[in-house]
View (cartoon, rainbow, N blue to C red):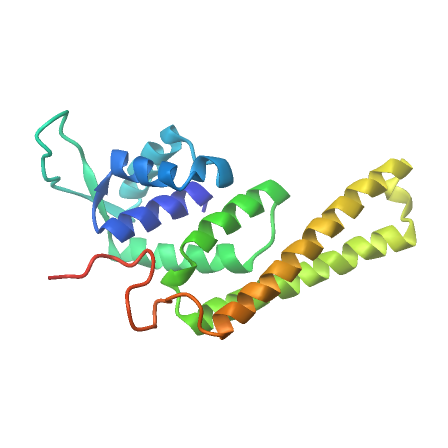
Length: 201
């Protein structure tokens, strides 16, 4: 699942029902176009595609008194399941190219509070273990002077990657500790967590 699809599901979930303009406006206020590569056209495409897949359903929209009628969407049960599964995957996994993984993780981190605390901690620890493995591999390449990394200056890429992974590992350990210490309202905590669906009245 793309970061855009996860963010769109998350925003529709958070509003309870939303039309494309609301989703776009919300994501732009978060600057998601910068840190998750979300584009306006991809938001509308994601809404239509996920509706066709049964993850969203069109619902009557309350008219605002101006402009054209809009189609509003809400999550189906399958959409909620997809949101939870993909959220967990994007937090835990580090596969794929660096930029796409960074976009996916940023999107997932936005909705981290939608998970129970222990589940979030487990997923973040899994990600930490994978990153520690990546760092060990990068150091091995640098220390071993593997022939396939020549010309020599390409080693600078591995130094850059290693430095980035080290910084991410340090930050991730801090986030895990903050969650262990009870920071942030999570899905299973008293109170309303970020991204929670509106309360049913």
